Image 1 (tube, rainbow, N blue to C red):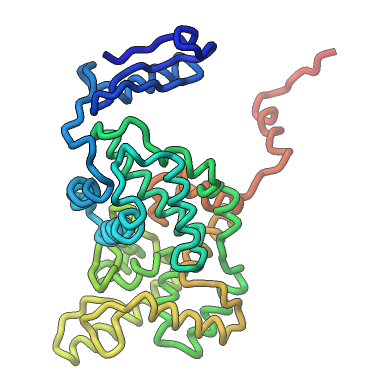
Image 2: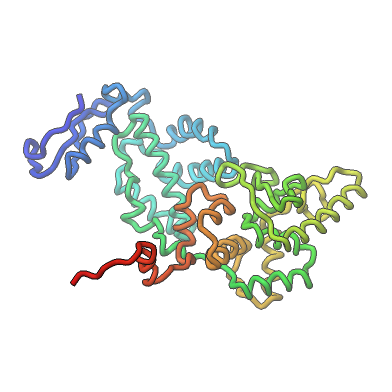
Length: 382
């Protein structure tokens, strides 16, 4: 039976040890600095009924077998097709080729570090840190599930993101954000209106609502409520199929007066073209020459780059910078972060603060004087 013992009893003075047997019947020790940490660890290795966790799987199961039979079935419960595809692709192209032949219980932290190091040299070139971070998170998720299933007792990928500095700090995230200044935003949209008017409605909607590219190209006519100045963002497009948005649920976004006017004119044209073709007016932004097909993200990116060039703006900007611009300009103007969170569809205010915190105006040292202003006359001690 699992128990906690003092470190002095096992030659580890000043420590606390969780002593138990894993699902394969092997005896394990987990050393922690405090009793509270040891109790928390004990809860991880015990079931709700207080009995030892029993492994129902073969303790010699390999990483590839576990991914195919158990992780594969779990992935089917992920609602977003894009996320499901990325997870499956990571397992098949990264994790299984590198660690697939090993038994799960033979994958140590050293092997995990070696695997992550090999990703930096994959295909003869260094992958982006963001890609390595993504693969690390998927691998950590797989082995965390194996811990829950009782096949292994410790996740070899646990804490490696911090130790190897794969996890980006809040400061790094904010420094990597690229957004237009108000002048650059106006220049981009004006050039688009004059030289690429066919793209002006799409980029105006993105710049005025904070929609992601996939969300914008997936908009339907019925999503707009121009009378009340609102837009319902109900999904995102992936592989020409409308899927759930990134947050997993839809959101309602407020529309500016200018955006309403641009959309009103564009919808009139969409309905006119649909009537001429004898098809229902459904999609707002469609692929050229095919009214029933969504725009491709790469097509939007190409058009965005053309407008950037004509506007004399840096080529390092991407269509997603319109979403960043939307958020940073609102926050800089003093709009409450809670409102920006709702507009962007972030699941937590923490995401908004961590991503755009440096654009939130700070009141300055004098702000604390407001404490005294409403307290009546305060006497100064002599």
